[in-house]
Image (cartoon, rainbow, N blue to C red; front, side, top):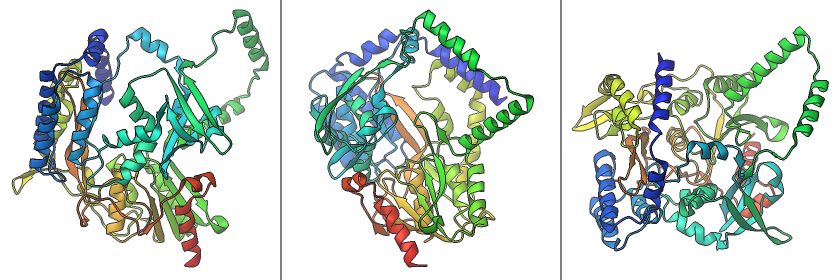
Length: 533
């Protein structure tokens, strides 16, 4: 049944995508009238007031009203969608919810153009960036650019990186009054923010500096494969491949098939990211004599996870491991179900991962599905399935003390896993520890189950508005606003309001640490474990 629904859903998506590409591209690049821009300001604020359950938690109604009114009054001349986005995002950030975002509309392509683009590659996407000590540098590079790792980025297309970062930070929303998220995410997602600022590009020049020199690296969008090979050369290559092909025995084919199946399962359980060529979930053993378990989790969003955690804690139990380090640095979050399952291995008591979530509507799932960004074909499907969605909403939403609350599965009491870890736990965090990773950090710190090392998380200790979303498109500028519909919070609270999970031991790495390939947070933990033996 589910497969049939998904198939129907996919077909309707394709049918609904036949809108005019030219019309869309004209709409997002033309100059919009002052009246249309002001209308979009009003439309967005209305949507926020209607759907966001904690709209005035960090900025009062009077102040937020003033900021939206000031934006409207400041619009005195026509502007295009991207220019408008740059002003609008500097106001919406005051909502103080990192999950609430606005994004400029992107250029659309016809089917033939999309097909051609799939054959292209843009190697600048192989670069990862980090921002430390007021320096933006390449922290990682996949492919042939590994020699650029740790090179400082001075300019992009002749514009100083610090000037770019200062602009980006003005548009970034974090949870509450947190600032570590701004610092971290502006480096980590530098290229994404650059695209938001400039629009799509097919080439880019980056001025870099390493210990030896300053130089310019140019990137261009090019074909993935060399298509200049002649038919004669191709026939020769195919002939050589045929000659090299060795016929396998039945037993060898069976063994190869089993090996391939095992590899696929391993990749699935560990959440292998084929684009980045890395695993989302890893278990290693580090420290003196390699007896300390290091659980690195890059996110809570990829593939199945139960088998990985079951096997991980079975291994720790069999080895009688007494120290576990959970690395949540640069983990932007993901599924509530996954952190709820993982926490069952980190406690020996019954637990509730989150409270019931405050919402502004009795039908949050239906509202999330039936937004103005939903293609008409899918709305038809949504109409067919609306009795199902509505029934789920009715069963999950209740009214208490005049407020509506949605009950996620993670709000139900759970039992600790039989092989729960009973040793010492350390958690590594930084400003990019956000959303679900911040939520499980709150649970661990609130229950006094772990020692935290690093810097304050980007996600708030006392909760955030997320879980379910409405993606709303402004009618004139086509800017998309993602609005959270449910307030997600752990049972534990702290004061003052509006900050993340703060470390027991604050350690902020430096650019020099990266050059020397030193991990100061991890080194501190390993030293502490040794001293306490």
